Image (tube, rainbow, N blue to C red; front, side, top):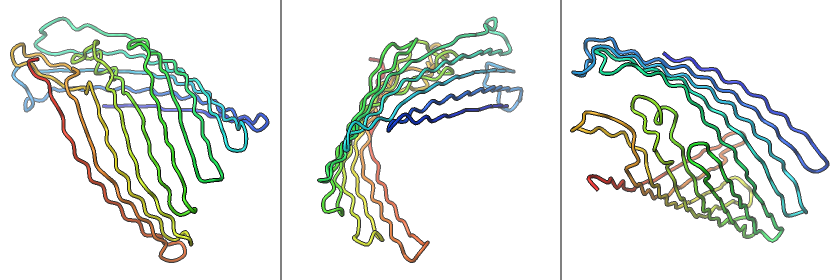
Length: 271
């Protein structure tokens, strides 16, 4: 059974040529897993019940500021508070149930600059630093240059980093591991886009490569009969995308897409 509640509010203020945005989001979720079926017994438990409750408050404030005719700056900060209550019970009881009540928080600072010249060159670059109560500080970045030739052909590239923190369930549930590291990734892509002079046709081709380390994996130890989440895998993906759009008649547009993705996962076992 699952119940969830989400609510939010957003305000935008204009200060001269600049705009200030303030957002607040609230998320509440309540999940209950119950297994009392005789058909799904795993040889160890005849009954199990896991309750997971979590709340999150998210506040974000950012400002858009035009520095001149071609350069725009965005700066912002956000705060995230997360708390959870969890309780797992199984029969026969291998150990007394231990309720969990914990919380985490994260503060972030970020900035981005965009440059749009009349000659066709454009650049977007940004960075963010996150301060997490469990994982310390992590930085991510993004840089995206492009060049528009004769208003018909756009050549572009993008290099960015990202990371994903473990969920509260992966950290603190009966399968949790509080020593998990965040997954971290680097993505590079480049491509070309074509616009017809009458704007009825546009085509786009993009190639990309992504590398991820410390991929979170659900691990079962056949010697100790225990299961938990661990950082085990490395993942590399690459491929390309083709996209075309054609305006057949007024109010009717046909689109076609093709994507090819390949890659590999490297798993570390026994050292």
